[in-house]
Image (cartoon, rainbow, N blue to C red):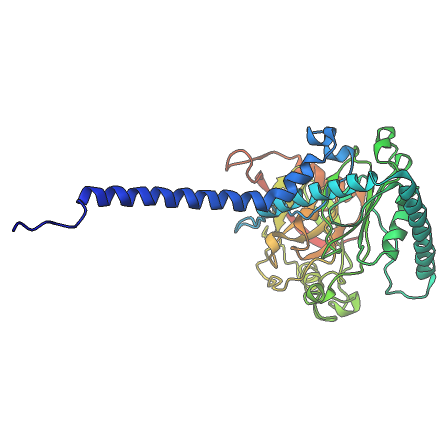
Length: 423
């Protein structure tokens, strides 16, 4: 009797395998699509409730400032290279999603009825008035360690996570009142205020009197989202409601890393001059910023450490810096670094590339260098406008970019200098 095979033909098995494989791929793709849709459902739903003007691309800053944290790439390069920091794309997407959600919540709140809104506005005004009184009482106490409303930055909009959004109930006339509200609000250490009067900008009526209360992890290093003469915002920070332990860990030891001139070299200069053929730049040394660097520069003066042309300027960047080296044949270079005590401002001097030197730079930007953070050890500041004018003159000297466009700009001829005691 002939044997009959019970197996399916080989071609049928292959066809069935391919069929079930396709079905599996379809199921997997459907699952991924469903998961993605569920993940973004709340954002999509929020977008459907936006005002037509907002949904169709009207600039956000016509309604409210943008918020978040950002650190731009770039920095001051030593001859070894340039550091950079890149913001996470994921963080940007999350930020935008939260912003859409915030807009929806405010739109919903406005639609709850005029009677309820009026009552809430009245209650909010009463609460804010009470907070300002409390803040005024707090600042009047004899407590030197308490944060106070002091320095503010006009034409500047600081980043930060929103603690209290601006509403008609929280509008205030002045930036000082906005700062007082931040001082009295738990979690707030950054404030942003808009004023037609203070900014002298009639076109800023769209945000006039708005007061935004925000928070950042490190208020000693605020980051500006926008700044310039056309920015109607005034911003400030308060050193409260943050974890100081991480920041204080790199502040240095008194008498070793920071101190007074009494801790520096005996008889050492407090003012020194960087003497060049283009003019002199007077530097006010700051031992309270970094004592070892001050001691090193004092030795350059007393021991004529720049003799022989070892100290020279070699790099210029318009609107940013003039850079050089204080390398000495006879005086050992500084070897210590310290977290910068503040954001570098125009005229401040620090070691380049986050190093301990001897390459250094003079910062010449118009605004505080928030994009540099506290990465550079700073030890002095140009003492007067005449010194700043000399620095700008040097920046305008003959220079080139041997690496091509958008690379470091170097002087065609290095400019030697000496470091002497200021007269």
